[in-house]
Image 1 (cartoon, rainbow, N blue to C red):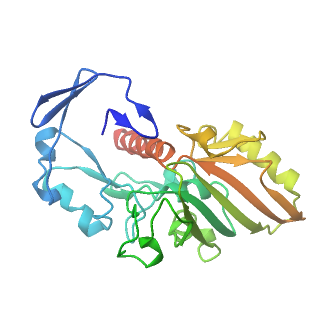
Image 2: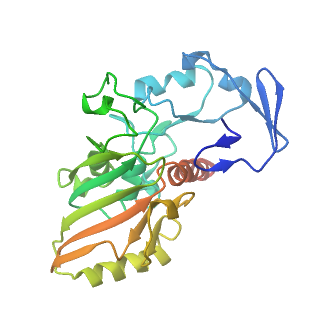
Length: 283
């Protein structure tokens, strides 16, 4: 599964099975294990200081802390968390403190939304691994159990709530929903917002373009071309604003549209946040 990916293609490096518990990727040996209980993973033996909790199961401070029993020093949850400090690179990572051992990188949608946010949002989201290939029971809701390849499925999203944690000044001012659509990757965010200060859609476009070329370069993107979702497969940015897709209804009331590779872009932010944590620890 590491070598062959239906969306991102074939890994261009070298992969060898060194032994039953070791992979060799591009000449570097990487230990592997298969444990249901994180406490049984010998992170200390692997000299793993930063651990990414990406199972989607151990997403609270209490549950994620189980990794520390195996020797992990820091744990990053690659999902929104109910109680762990939450960070979005480019938005609030500078508030991270070295004594925070367990943090959340929020969600891919939150990472797209936070650089733009304030209003009512809808995300049109590519299929994810938790969805069903054919109709079946769902632990979350009945609609979520319908076949992913056959339906546009209305769903909830925690992105708006998570933005309120990342940007406290927006807490309670943002809500939204998701539509799961039968595409393998790349999602799009639709944010309808009313601004406190008078500004035209052209003003907002100019501000976003400036930010994308300056302080948020590499995090926030800007395009005025006639693009579609597949044009963003492999894009490492969190949020790519689509200037042509948005609409300015009136002064200060508008719809903003932004794309994101919900796999590749988010994975890059996980690494960016770990790098920032390491720099803070080194100071």
